[in-house]
Image (cartoon, rainbow over all chains, first blue to last red; front, side):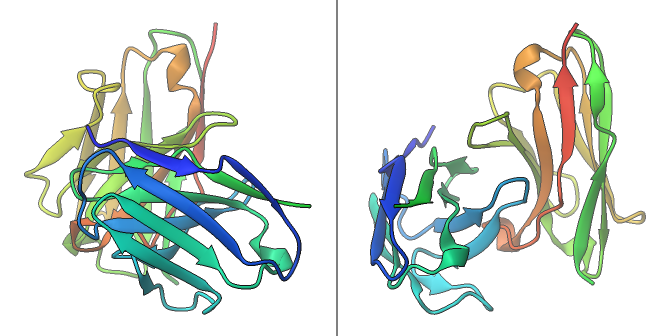
Length: 106
Length: 118
């Protein structure tokens, strides 16, 4: 099984901050990686696919990078709507999600 | 409107059974691989099972293999999850989700809650 490890688990930040979340795969997954945002009581929402492709309708302050085993999600200027939990997901072989990163208000 | 709507969740005793359903609308259901993903209370997302567009290829997480069965009816635009021999650790919100080209999901249902408790 491919294990996905996110860091940090929790991130405290302020509106306007630049935020970076890291996701590591236990083996190479090429660029078969997606990022989702989830708010309490809601389903996940796709932000990024193929490691760096921005899903239609997602604000351009979100960006993704990486390949192989190391990936990052960056929010260039944190907005109030961005306080949520973020998950990476590999789809190289079946699906595996990272444990999540909660972005909270500092 | 593009949407997935789950139903069938509820409270069941350990060892019991439930059948979850997921109704699709607003997109060509029959062309998509479909998935079940669950989220235990206060925990992260866990992939449960996937089924390809024709129903010929089916995959399960190790934690549910032999107890949960995924199926679909393309004529009814519906996805199903038959859950048998339920355990307390199966307690979760269950989401259905599509898979674009068998990969990531851009359509998720709102989830249905399964609680396994005596």
